[in-house]
Image (cartoon, rainbow, N blue to C red; front, side, top):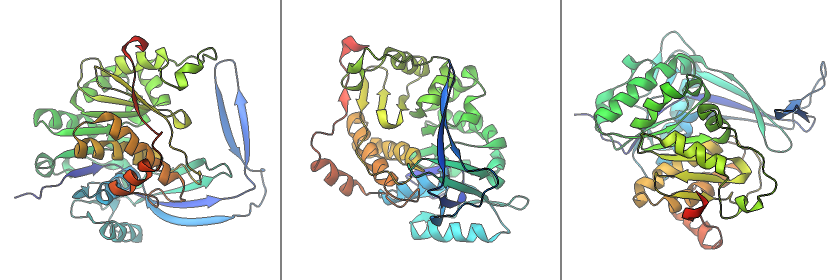
Amino acid sequence: MSKKYDFITIGSATIDYFVESDQSIIASYSTMKTQFDLMCFRYGSKVEIDEFQRNIGGGGLNTAINFANLGFKTTTMAKMGSKDEIQGVIKKKLKEANVDTANVIQSESHMTGFSIILVSFQGDRTVLAHRGANGHIESKDIDYDIIKNSKWLYVAPLSGKSNRVLDDLAKFAKENDINLSINAGTTAIKKGEKYFSNIIKAAKILVLNKEEAQMLTGISVRPDTKCEKFSQCEIHPDVIAIHKKLRAGSNAIVIVTDGKNGVTAYDGKDFYKCGEFKAQVVSTLGAGDCFASTFTAAVEKFGYNIEKALEYASVNAAAVVEHFGAQEGFLSFDEIQRKLDINPDFKAVKVKNETR
């Protein structure tokens, strides 16, 4: 008889090496069609490191530890190398966090993934990632009986060849009426809207950031300086169009995150909006994993109360960015509620019909 879990996560497992230097330079690059920032160091220079830490990370682990911290029986099907010392460090940390490691997938031919994370003085980061075993999850590695007996399957972004299992996972979830929550990654999104529409149809919750949502739908969010009201109680019409296109033909709650601009949600009937919960940013790494998994956990705990789930997810994600590691700031449900109690003006809102 397979064990029963509240949440099973599938995604990456890494050791993250955090490197922070005040000598980093932030340079902005603009053209007529695009704008982005670069983190730079003087070429050929010797750069002093101000802070250095080593933590476990990756979407599969970050979310598993968060679910466990929120009180749910959790396991992960992340893939790691069987012959390196890193997997031992990761398993030890998972056990300390009350995550069952019995379903960790081990690779005989690939090492455990790792990342070097360059943190700027502004708190943002650039990640140098080696996928390792993370890019080689295969359908034969996955125990589908355990998934069938569990309440939720949470799929974090999958890299490399591992994306091939997303089809099988979505099909299995749909055929067996399994609650599926997906935090999509760019590798899957690049396969196109037609491919991804089948994945969305199997999901109960889909979480994308704004850049990913624009890429998937082909809809760009046009700047509109005339409409400051969009930052208060309304939603930009292009964001509404993105939500409607993503949800077409599915029953998923669609979430689109937009950093400092907060988050929007659509359940097929109503739109919702929630601002960013104030935080002193140290590092943004792991905030997305924390938001998506906390939202999913709150949906399970509070019975699809979307406004409450958005508030809880925003508070927990804000706690994570105030710490250097991706899991250091995780809060319990009670701790999140206490923060909401002392910040009564922080509310998610259901957007009025006429703003659609």
